[in-house]
Structure formats: C-alpha cells, structure tokens
Length: 494
Image (tube, rainbow, N blue to C red):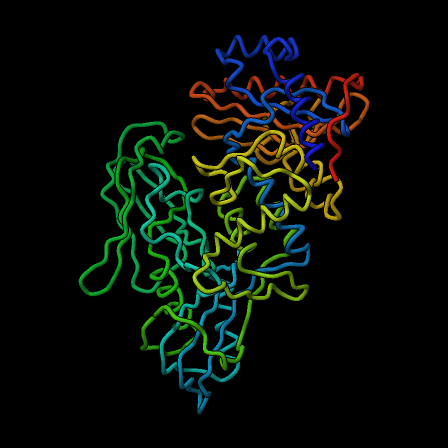
C-alpha cells in the first residue's frame, strides 16, 4: 500500500506540476476565463495510466460530486435490494372499534414517504376495525441519533425554505414541502396550498406589480408560518408578485412535527376516525405490534434520483442510513446506535472503512453530510478517481454508472456539451457552489476507451460560467483523444 501511494505521489509530481502541462485548448480557456493554475485540480485515468494530472493530491471542495462517494458506498454497504421503511405500531388493544393505547409512527429513513402513503397506512388501520384512537400519536425517530438534525441548525444560505436546503429526518413526510399555486389578475392574488392540513391556512401580504411573470422570483421574500392563539397555523407569503401571472412553487416552512400532526389529523378525519390525543416524540415499546407499513423504492432507484438531478436531501438520507440501517433484502432493518454515538459518526466511519478496504488513502478527506452542500467537505481528485475506478469494478457498476447524468441528454448535464464529442457518451456528476465548479465520472475517448475523469475548480472566480467553460473544454479534449499516453502506470486500483 505504501509503495502504491509513493508511486502515485511521484506520478502526480511529474504530471501535475505546471500550467504548461495542461492541454492547449484547456490552458487557453483558463486564460480567457481569468483562472490560475492554483484554482484547478485534475486527474484523468485510462485504465491504470495517468492521462492528465494537476494538483491531484490536493484536498479540494467537491460540491455535489461528493454524492458519488455517498451513492457508491451505499450501493456496496446496503446493497441494491435495500429499502427505507416506515411503520405504524401499537401495543394497545383494539376493543369495539377503539385502539386503547398510543399509536406509534416509526421512521426508518423512508425517502419516498408521502401524504398518500400515510393515508394508505391509516386506511389499513381502519380496515382492522379502528374508528377511535384513545391515546397519543408517538413520532419515533430513534433510528437516528439525534432524530431531529434540523433543531438549532443555522440556515445554509438565504433560502432555507427551498427544497435543496431541507434537512434530513428519518420520519419526513412529503419532504416537509407545501406546494403553493399563485395566480394573479391585475387586482387580485389567489393562493392554493397542497396538501390540505388540519387547521393550516395560507395568506399573503404580497404586492402586485408590473413585472415579467418569468422573473416572479425576483420579488420573493422569505415566507413564514405563524401560529395563532387558537392553535391554528397560517402560512404567510411576503414580497411582490407580477400581475396576470400564474406560477407554482414548493416551500419548507412548517415545523416537521406540526406538519405530521396536521396531516395525520386531516387524513384520519377524512376516513371518519376520531382522535383527541396529542402528537409527541417517543420510542415504540418493544411489544408494539406492526399494524401497517410502507417501504421506499429500492436503492438503485434512489441512487439514480440522487445523482441525476443532484438531490441533496436524498444524498444526506442515504449517508445517514449508512450509520443507522442494515442491508436487508426484505426491508431495511433498524440498527440501534451505540450508547452516546451519533449516527453521523457511524456513517462517517462506514465511508472511511470502505475507502480503506479499497486501499484509498483517506488523508485530507472531510465529509460533513455526504451531499456536497457544505463549505467543509474536502476530497482530492486522486481519492475521487480511485473511488470511480472501484465503481467500475463493483458488482453494482451498472447501477452506479446509470445514475450519472449523460452529457447533453439528461439530469444536470442535459444542457451541457451538446454537439461535442462527449454528448450522449460521457456520464458525469456535476457540482456547483458559489466558489466551486466540479465534474467527476466517466468519459469515453474517440476509440471508445473509458476514462475516469475528475476535475475541480475552487476559486472566487469560478462562477458566471467561467469554471464550467474550463471543465467542459477539458471533457471535450478527453472525448476527442484516443492515443494511450506513454507514461508510467498509475497505482493499480484493487
């Protein structure tokens, strides 16, 4: 292992030292975009040979390319048959249509749990003869420690209501989102909200203005959920909205316990059921029997929906599942955290153990949430490239590769590299933050030979298309190449 990384260091010193080593088309674009040598980290491998390396051993911000780490390790550790699961349990008896005891809603990182699924589970309870619940609804998030990661966490940016900023939760319904329909005339704004929630309404103090409907978000201000004295909740929208405009958006403004509380009461009432208890946090008793359940889609489907559109919430849910759930072909089995050990600690250990098992040195590697929506996460181009090599050799390589956006075709790459040699052929995960642009994945060359491709731009000048132009030029250069470079072999991936 030491020999492998000593050889890697030698190769990276030879091929990653100078800007002049970069392909001429890429160097030219870098100059045009005002980026410097120090802004860029690259490693391109053809088999075990280094095609191009530049600062490949430097820990850099990967943005959403970090999702490749989370999804690759998830496929190998949890397996393709893995599913998250939600359970409805109780230790109370059902007597003459009455459930005498608490009803427990137990979360198991079910990424697909919707309001319709809650209704289906409650309908199953109704079919078992329950018409009234004499007890409380207990929300069990014990599979994670802590169960509510969002409590006390400062917002990542100025849009905490946006879906990409939703904090994961082992018991999250509808991803805690409210869908809002906004329609205006010259004088009036009409609002509709889905799903319907018990004693939750929507209102607005938005001002109607003469503006382009396509740019309606320019006047958007942070909405809020206001609790009334009688226990009702009113969602209030603020800002301005164009006249004669119709738009739909989704927001995350309700506390998630309130969301489940109001959704449960609404659905149970619609089924003709009665419930006068409270909604509380707790743990299912050991003797609580299973009354109904829901399982998510299988892991490969979740991985695809994580990487293609770059879904932060799904990535973070999978990452924490590595520290809380176990592979189970029937449904994900719960693994109780060790005393005092957080789910994050267990998840991070699972990732690092996988890396070391594949002889990937984890020095300098930092993972905060597994999605890349972080200012702390770091990975070297070399570490990412070795992970992608391991992905090619994995039993689940087809599932992993098919989850990546296809250049010029779909996902976050659908509008990039159209009309180039990489279009319809390269599979690349994108990454974008204010000061980061990244690409990582697989690029076939002109001979159809697969290249492992990793490139990061970390710079305050990376935005406004500058970093993207450099990386797209690099991808096209690789896709047009076809001659095996005459260099010493890189360290063989296991």
